[in-house]
Image (cartoon, rainbow, N blue to C red):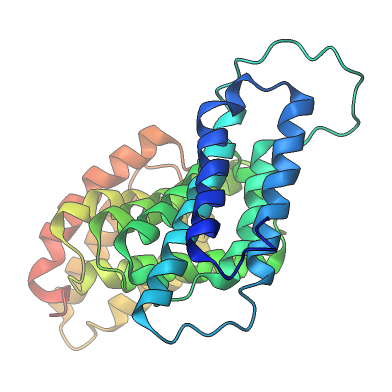
Length: 305
């Protein structure tokens, strides 16, 4: 139907809404075999939609809003499918085993891989779509961080690029917080599992400097400092060598003033004093408290307006 009526925006929207409602209200009662049918049908729907968007140019405001509504529904569909992995009220599946188990997270991530090329920076300016997108990727990461580390490298690259956009350009506190949540969850998993071979490891490294710069240049609201500092701690655990390099650069930036230089050395020493770099929650809380004191100590001479 979607392939046949893809030029009719109202019909396209109704088809997407049908899938969204089915996943939201009925999927939790489906058996594994029935769920697989909906998963495959949903992915086919997403592929068909994406195929008809390739090369399409959005030249007027109305067309852009139509695409925004469509993508919002597709993101909601993926989120609704994902709920199957933790709300499953289905009866035992009496049918024969159908081979490899497909999880809702696999479907959601594969669907994201198809949708993400359609998510332009312009479309992310729509608040609802932007929020839904970051909610979806953070939701996936919170439930299955291991799957994020094994994603297609191109999709990992797109995820990291969108996180950078959310931290620096969107200007919405909720989106900033969701980006921090994503980095925290993924970073904690990578620290605990000692993962450095994943393609997403190196692209995560620049977030350490980015967060430190955002905090020290006062480009984020003070209410976001606790969330930022907890994320910063996880990144320090993950990239200790980079952290030491950044600290040294900041200390050397005060070489012209020996008093400030010494204050900065002491402030950084106290920041991680007696705090193991293990990314455990209790240590994140202690680091956050230390970071509040750190900011008070260095605010007068280190913060750049």
